[in-house]
Image 1 (spheres, helix red, strand yellow):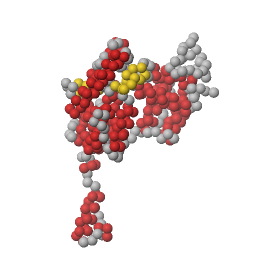
Image 2: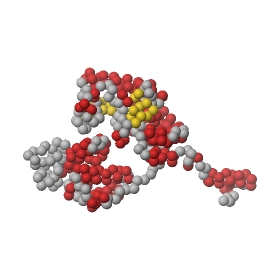
Image 3: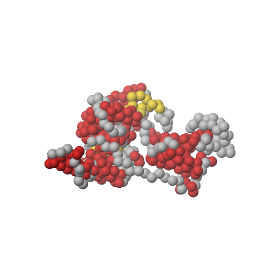
Image 4: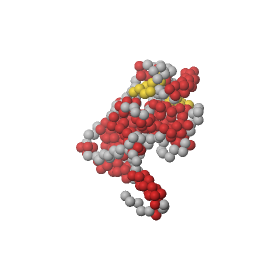
Length: 375
C-alpha cells in the first residue's frame, strides 16, 4: 500500500518504496535514495528565486495532485490525470479561475522544472479564460467610517490607514524595514514588491507622526531582542552571507514586528518576524462590520480605493500605474470602470419615467398608479 513517503521520495527502480521518511530530511545513502519530490520542488523554486508564497502554493497543489491520483508518482501520470484533477477543481471544488490557473501553473512547473518532462500534451491542456472583474471600491465616506471604526491607538488601524494612504499591497506594507520609511523626502520605498520590483510611494502627512511613534515602539522591541540574544531578522537573498551582522542592525528591523518569535520556515531559525497577514485581515473585516459597510472589505479593497480616488481627483493614470507598481497600464485601466464620470454619472431612463408620471399626476389631478404612462 502506498504511503505518504511517495510524496517525498523520488521513486525509481533504485529506491525502495513504502519506506516512511520525513519531508526535507532524506539522506543520500550509498546512492540508493535521492532527494524527495517535494524537496526537489522546493529546491528548484528557491533556485529560481520565487517567493515563499509561490513555494507554499506550488507545494500545496503538488501534494493535492498526488493525493487525488491515489498517491502515484507524477512521473507515472499523464495528460488524462492532470485534466481529471483540474476538472475536479473546477466542477466539484468550484475554485475560482485564478485558483484554477495557479494549480495548472504548479503542475506545469513540476513537470518541466522538477521532472524535466517537456511533453507534447502539456501544450494541449485547456487553460481557463480570465474574467475581468470590477474591483470592490469604497467611497471616501465609507473609507472614513472604516478607519474610524478602529480605536485611536490600534496598530491594525494604523496599518489600514497606511494601506489606503500609500496604495501598497498588504505584503509590501508588512515587509517594510525601518530604513524604507524616509521622513526627510516624505516617501516610502517598497522593496521586492510583486514581480521583485522596487518602487517609491508617497508618505502621507497624516501618517508622519503615527509612523514615528510606531518606529519608536519597534526600536524598543529591537533593543530587547538584542539584549536577549535573539537572532537577527530575515534578510533577502544572500545578504546574510555578505553582511553577517546586518540582520541584527536597526536599519533592517521590521517596521511592523510581531509580538512573539516564530520559526523561519526555510531556515528553521526562531526569530522575530513581521505581523501576519491574517491578523490585519481579520481586524479590517471586524472594522467593516462595525462601520456597517455592506461590501466585502479586505486589505486589498483599500488599495483599490486608493487608486480610484486618485483617478477621481484628476491624477494621471500613468502616475497611478507607477504608484501601484503595475507593469502594464491596462491593469490600471480597470479602475476607470468605477469612476463617477462613467456609469455613476449617467442618468437612468427610469428616472425620466418617474418624473413624467409625477408630472402627469399633478396636471391630471389623478394618482400616477391609475394613469397610463406613454413611452
